[in-house]
Image (cartoon, rainbow, N blue to C red; front, side):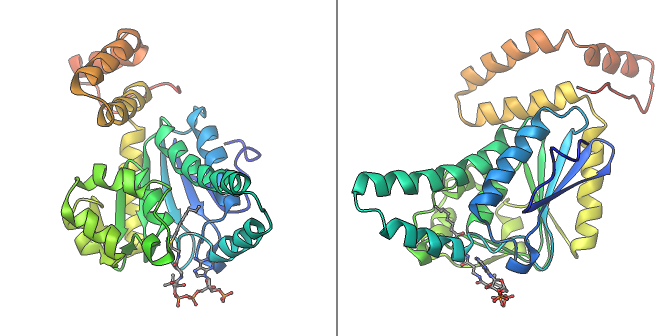
Length: 280
Ligand SMILES: CCC/C=C/C=C/C(=O)SCCNC(=O)CCNC(=O)[C@H](O)C(C)(C)COP(=O)(O)OP(=O)(O)OC[C@H]1O[C@@H](n2cnc3c(N)ncnc32)[C@H](O)[C@@H]1OP(=O)(O)O
């Protein structure tokens, strides 16, 4: 890992296992509340990871007491002050749009990153936190975790991803609407029942150990195939089956010429275990 590319004020990045990067939201005193700086750093971080051959899987978690308290309200208040100093409606709108775009881009960069992203949530995951985790590939949490799509309580139509992605994770059903309209808190148990999280762990320590083990398993597979699988899943979610099949066929007419295919098939034929794939 080039430490320069991964030096941030609001994030901490480490390499706990070969090919596995750990990105931590790192504003523990503010309960990992999200600022525009954090959003810009998330974008820069995931863009760097996307092209980094030493990373095949990412685990994202929160440092300190909880995963994230959502939007930093101090920053929101400062923004309101700045907004009140602008007179013209178009210029006010342009100012607000820049902030919304930053939040959207941060989480979309996780989805666009070819490396699978595993979100590990402990304690609270509020507001923009739910938007963040729905842009991840898989979500895990601790028994004490709770979730809240809180925006309506603040007079905000959530605009950084949860309304678009949450229904695609758990289904376009009445429960999603109830959660988003009421802003009620829901527990790890309910999150598991509706399919928002894949597994619930006893505590943060066992969650991190379990999630890192899953990450390691993913990292041991062909990076060509894993990254192609992510692209195909993300593309197919947003397109027709026909378009998804066309997309994967076009991708694989190139990728099946990769050495990874020969390595994988040869290992299968010769019953070879613990195969290693080259960096991509
Ligand atoms: C264009 C923008 C689009 C994005 C929109 C996004 C919207 C959202 O995310 S809506 C959700 C906003 N977040 C919240 O409403 C959560 C507010 N916080 C809380 O309810 C509580 O703090 C919480 C339940 C998370 C934890 O309670 P606890 O008693 O354990 O801790 P506290 O004493 O309340 O907080 C400890 C210190 O953290 C600071 N803090 C907490 N939340 C935020 C926050 N969202 N932003 C900034 N700072 C936060 C809190 O002020 C305390 O600091 P200090 O007083 O200096 O000790």
